[in-house]
Length: 456
Image 1 (cartoon, rainbow, N blue to C red):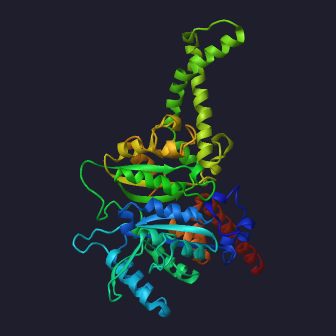
Image 2 (cartoon, rainbow, N blue to C red):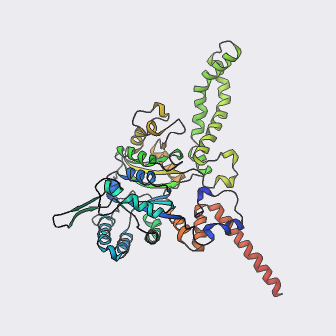
Image 3 (cartoon, one colour):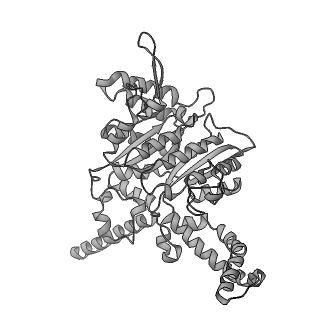
């Protein structure tokens, strides 16, 4: 068992349970590791992000544990370059090559001061660092077969004298657990200041016609390791829009209720359209005479809210793993049991472009080549959600707290001391963290009272 994953926390926490959990019992289980991938600015700008994500998820048996967009500051980029340069004396040439690349491509544009976009992905599982390293491949591209990510998306061009003429490693990863821990320790210190919604990046357009829209890659794409999430992102790259934020989410029931709240009224109205004819046919068959559809209008008006509530419960369960009616208020605030990947796209007419590529709600009616036609099953299990207006996009981004730092708490849970782990629990599962701290305080007060009694 590894650290306390928010999606796996269940029930009310007792202090004995907390004390026995790996998050508070010392080192994380050795069989599980946390590995990172940094998708480089050029790879993101060339819309190769989806292909890279598809390779990492589809070719490993690792769980995507977290994701965050960064706009590295000069301080972060410089510190990272220095760390890489001095990391391995036995491979000084490659380390120097990558360090120079970081200095050139990660530091904000000197003319405008605008940052570059770097996407961090966190993967968890057995031998995670080794698996990520194997799928990534060598920075110097010893093979030309396209087997690894760097073989496919990277470049390493030498001149006639074997000097490096052009170098693009596509992604940056760590070759060892110690290097991974050191790098993640550095980036976690800048996660709040340099990460989030990077809409000020050099290659992100600005202007009055620019919109943000939210895409939510749904849980059916994460039931097992699959290239589907990356393939969906790859199709969405047809929009020409820029990804300015990303976050792995285990939506709470409370969030899902707010997120899908507007659907309730739509479902109630929809029942009047779809329920009348079906009810008339069913009753006619049962009683042996033709029933006018109009006669069912009043019945449908009464049943509409019931239908809407039933469907709403199923939608929330699909997105979170729990029905609202089966949850206490405490449970509604816990991270859900299902995973999603949220992305914020930005550009001209972003909402319309994404919805066109996504396709209609019913995959069977969506156009060939659209996301929902390719990956959807039915109206609910339809691969992805997209905002239906710029205003609603901003509301949905706020509901899911896309900008909130979910990377640092995860790293604190792995690498921090006891106080950092308590803080991580508070950030990952606020209610459990508060309950734990309250229990600690109560126990301390009891011990203190007992000591005073003895002193008397």
